[in-house]
Amino acid sequence: MFESIRKHSKIVMFLLFLLIMPSFVLVGINNNYFSERSAVVAKVDGHDITQADWDNAHRQESDRLRAQNPGIDAKLLDSPAVRYATLERLVRDRVLATAAQKEHLSASDAKLARSLQEIPAIAALRKPDGTLDGEAYRALVGAQGLTPEGFEASVRRDLSVNQVLGGAVTSSFAPAAQAAVSLDAYYERREVQLARFDPAAYVPRVTPTDDDLKAYYDAHTAQFQTPEQAAIEYAVLNLDAVKKGIVPNEADLRTYYNENLDRLGGKEERRASHILITAAKDAPAADREKARARAQELLAAVRKAPATFADVAKKNSQDPGSAANGGDLGFFARGAMVKPFEDAAFSLQKGAISDVVESDFGFHIILVTDIKVPKRPSFEEVRPKLEDELRQQQATARFAEVAENFSNGVYEQADSLKATADKLKLEIRTASGISRTPLPGATGPLASQRFLDALFSQDSIAQKRNTEAVEIGTNELVSGRITAYTPARTQPLDEVRDQVRKKVVADKAAALARADGEEKLKAWRADAAAAKLSPIQTVSRDQPQQQLPREVVDAVLRAAPASLPSFTGVDLKGNGYVIARVIRIVERPAPAEQAARQDRQQYQQWWAGAEGRAYYELLRKRYKGEIKVAKPAAALAG
Image (tube, rainbow, N blue to C red; front, side):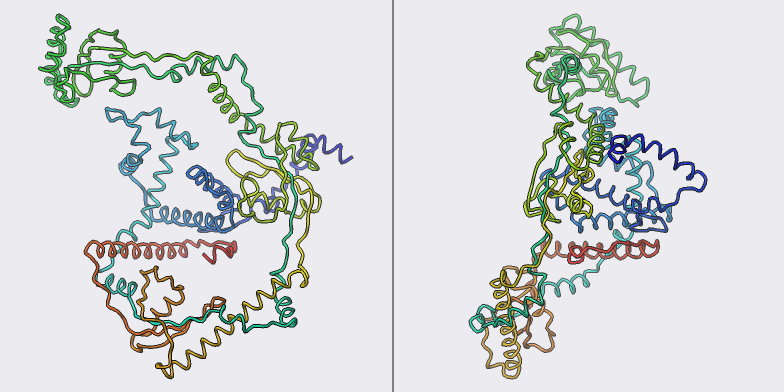
């Protein structure tokens, strides 16, 4: 019976839909139906941010980073800390957008236009006459899945949001005296002498007993667990896999060749000379007519004697860039000149002279001196390239359909990947020693935390069924199943006795080093002359070449100036103990003017950043921005 339902799942789903929908119409749809899919992970100003919002934002951010850094390690993008950072940015964006709306901040059309012009990719689309290439602009924003109107609305929204923190950041200032006090404290230098107590020196004094080993093992059993592992098989669907199953037919290739022949062969180029009589487009009509009349006179002259064109251009053309060369402009393709000039130049035969051509710059007389017609490649010459391009296009167009078949197939035949892989001509790959987190050096699906989470779900482990189709990148899905599973276990003491011994010895040696250091610290404070210390050295935050532990540097610089010279002790935990005798503060050498200016600028940036963060925290509280998901340990540590 269940096999029959599985085979006719779409029919069963349709019947269930007909049975269930009337009850929804009568009593409404309870939000609990979608609670798992739409779990609230944050709130801003009373508006929910759902798990779906978070997933979409993280997917977009990951796609953006992959596009910028194709070689980026995928597991870095899927780590809990990075995902949480996406949620924090999402909340921040919502808070700032709410503030912009509540405070009625908006960007004017002029501000929007200036901002668009400052985007290099858009600035590069300007034609020689200064106008924007509309078709190229639409293609540019279309590549991001946007219309020009949608893109401009997004930029306008960003400009409005930027005004929220802009006021706080740009108006912040740090007086020179304040900067000097803070920078002097930050770069302060102190003379010190050190005594180090290295645990390695105390190892010979440690002889652990069996009871010591057992006590340590019993207290730290988590250190001696072997993680759960699985052997898996999986199949990946991506554009390359779809391309392999596409064989363009001859007719499609021929059509594609004819449609792209100009692109494949390169652009036709013209070489031309011109005579320009300038007249600004906003000049009085009388001035423009005067310039036109002068151009007509020169046109009549060169048509009577075409061989004199270069001499006439040298004497009369008002184009400073070409007049000295007899009006020669060199070779150019379509798109390089203003449209009236281009249309005229590309309509003439070699050696022909145009009528007077009007443009925003004035009036032109054009002589076409040469024509370069690119050699058009034969169909067979470019066939491999055409096949690859057409297969790529068809794979992109078909991917959504194939992805649906892949998703349905791995679900409907959940006991094996073979049927779906055979149908879609996919390779079934295998891997062993897989755990819940990506292994060092893992790539592709095995570096995706999302895929590993699906593999190690309760149902997947117990039933060894296919996972759902998991999206691990742009146009990339994977499904896998566990073929063999080994649960985590605690290794017996006898198996790990050597490991336990090393840890016990290290702990006891560190404890002896600490005890010896603390004893010496007490004695030397009472009798400084008895101290056995290193030669005097200077310590500061801007001298990393000292290779001192950060804890030691911080302790030295925290010692109260009024009590110097004085002793302080620093416990480096498993790395030993250090006693520092802080002798005196060394006056910081006056930095060069340029370095001092850079320091003040850096301090101003720190101060502005701090004020911006403080103002954001105020806005977050004002508009009740809260995250309902616990922060991962890695993010807390960071």
